[in-house]
Image (cartoon, rainbow, N blue to C red; front, side):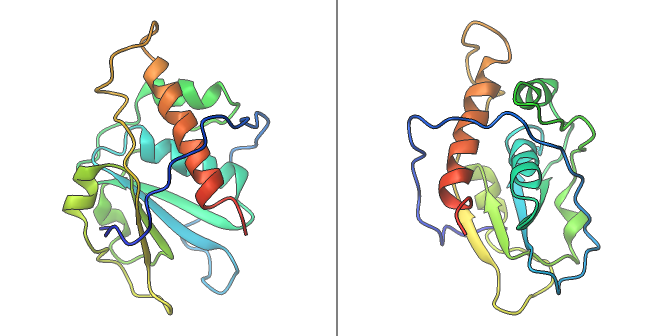
Length: 175
């Protein structure tokens, strides 16, 4: 679904995380005539990284973006991803893992692959074409499910969450 057309960006090592957000549920049926850009975050399982990115965008940048997430092999949202986001007062507990086919007829301004497997499986998004085309971005984040717990079982999720937040702020946070 994605091709590495965007440059790799390293998130800053220190950046404060805002902690008071309201969770919003995106509306896939919104008219494309509005000014919001649609973003699809892709990972293999749609269990953690892509779910956290969706939550950040819809909470922090819901005035400019509509975010969605999917997986090439969607499973379930991991409880540690929910917990990591709750630490920042962002509730993703109602989000569900979705297979990519759910968005087959949707159009997006950005398609972001968040792991090498998603980039390999999805070099081009098969959805509807929009004027101006789709911008493909690839930025690989560690899989918190494969990381060694750093003291607590959910610690890798918090670390990856912070990396995703820093990347979003650097890449998409500025108009």
